[in-house]
Amino acid sequence: MVTAALPVGLSDWRGAPRVQALNDRVPNASGRFVLCWLQQALRARDNPVIDASIRLGNALSLPVLVYHGVREDYPYASDRLHHFILGASRDLGTGCRDRGFACVHHVDRAGHREKGLVHRLGAEAAAIVLEDQPTFVARWQSDRVAARTAVPVYAVNSACLVPPALLSDDIRGRSSFLRRHEPERANWMEADEAVPDVSAYAGPLPFSPDALDTCDLDALVAALAIDHSLPVSDMHPAGRPAAEARLRRLVTEVLPGYASARNDATRADGASGLSPYLHFGVLGPREIMAAVTAAEAGSKHKAKFADELLGWREWFHYQARALAAPERYDRIAGWAVETLGRHAGDPRPELETLDALVHGETRDQTWNACQKQFLLDGWMHNNLRMYWCKRLIAMTPSPEAAWATACYLNDRLSLDGRDPSTYGNISAIFAGSPSDRERPIYGRVAVRGDGSTRRREGGDEWLATAAARPVTRLTIPAEVPVDPYLTGEPTV
Image (cartoon, rainbow, N blue to C red):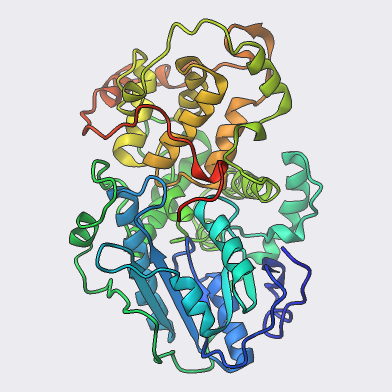
């Protein structure tokens, strides 16, 4: 971030706390549009990135052009991730056109390469508005574009209900975060959607866009040079209609008993399953909280859901903004690093191969049941994640290897991987409250058993059935890959 005044159109917007300037350029006087470049916030409505773009476009008397592109070579690109992303992108385009502005797409593939496309689009723009994402590809690419382009670049937070910039940067614990965050929530519950003043951009483009609304997405994905061994998740269909259906399910089936059912992985109505749609911005937190507020459910259930969606998720987003790499092992609490390090050389009789871990074929039935949710469903119940992650410390050669394996399995398999929330959750599980006594391997890091699931009525049977689910064989590397975003400039 740089110190630069926001232009008219953004500085006088009530959502201005969401916006930060990434460079100190001035708008291109000959620009033909304001470029709204989306990477993860894939929704046309209630999207602060789009609304900031419209406000800036109106101030400059220019149309807005929304662009979303997908490359083949991001880490762990697969049928599962590509299909989910492209389904969301297709509905994003439809929603943008319904609102009266243009949206174009590009799917990178053999015979259809477009090197430096964002830079080329930016060269024809008056300014670029993009999303403020603190992890994975989006963070690196945003910084790179801002440094190399000749036009101003503005990053807009769309992932949080409360703009993180409203909170001071000295918060160290979740209780302090909540004391500052909770009083602000009501101020941001009203949607603030901008209306374009000019007609949709219909001028020339430096590439031929893909028509996602008319193409066969399955055939398109099948032709790409990506991981085809990881199939699409049937549990989480792609696109806006599926997200809306999941939100209706939350209101009618999940929320009325949420406070008591949320920790029971054996119940189909215990979790919302919204995290994949939140990660890719198909739904936003304000829309979800509006539905929760209006729902016919008890106050304790609404409060517990709000604590998960806003109290925990936005706390992890807040933390990630201050970290150079939220997915790095050294982010966990210092005392946990120290105690795990003291026991790094302890014998580990429960070591498992990466192949057994990926496919959920270890000697631990409960762990296998957890892992097969990631492998088959592209998602894992939060209660199971805690057991799954803790056990990796004993099932891998070192605490650092456990962390890398957790991130690898999460990022490759889960539709809500590569996210501030999932990295924050892994970090919290690796540390948490220290144990009263020191144990081999774990030191003072508390362990976790599977009793909370086994003691449920039918819990043993549920775990046995979940662990026995048949799987498709995936291609497995010889060892856990090193995240390119931790070792230097990535290739994308």
